[in-house]
Length: 371
Image (cartoon, rainbow, N blue to C red):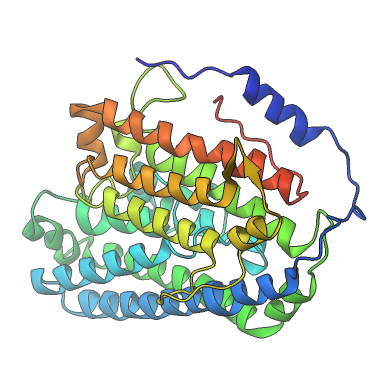
């Protein structure tokens, strides 16, 4: 298997990211309108994306209610469709772990995978569980719904049988309902926060300290790219950080043919955010890209913003060769997964090192993947 070792450059990155202390009053020394960028990010990307996701969660909740009232194959298919729509929609908001989302650990309660199917079954049979505990994060969210609507049996009739069983059917229905209700409740908390006071707090915190909104959202953006897109969706299943592959650690493992669609949706959302592209539209506004252009940031004689955007496109082209089922891809031709990881890794350097240096933003996290 291909080895991925610490390079001298990676060591330099780590050294740079940890060396400068807590200079909270340090300024960038440029006149870029950070507030205008935060307004665009909040009003045209983050809030509309959350509102759209909230609507999809409501549809998922309604489909769950219909299925638990009448547990048949038709309603299972409809529930699965609502789950798929919400899961795709989730990919546009999962990168915004700030404000209420950070406070409630939104991402970890919504989409930890792989899930613990043994514990899920224990919860169902015992009817005793606390989904608010950290220990239960792999027993809920989209991954657990994947298990409950795709993984209980190999046929739709077999899955429905779990919900119509005279002894345990109601237990499965209750757990399914509890999972979706909790996801909907958490979503409403985050959306209410953004559409309430937090939007103003986010925009007004437009300075250049380590706790400013620009610094925090930049770090959250890169952390998500590095940890959840690059490592979670590709690197870990492909065995980049180990001596073996893990085909069971892909996203939407039980659905089987959905992991590529989720990857592409998240990649698109991250590229659009970098470019300041309005959610659901084609217009663009102030963004990390326009900030880099304002600073005329050049790397090796080329425009850094264009390098980053082009690398997103190169990654997408490379990933186009992957099958829809990443678990099967790992088993049959893992080289394509590794190639996709390599292209993703290039933008880690461009953004985590080159972009943050240009914007005078310090890294506030340490990646522990061993890469």
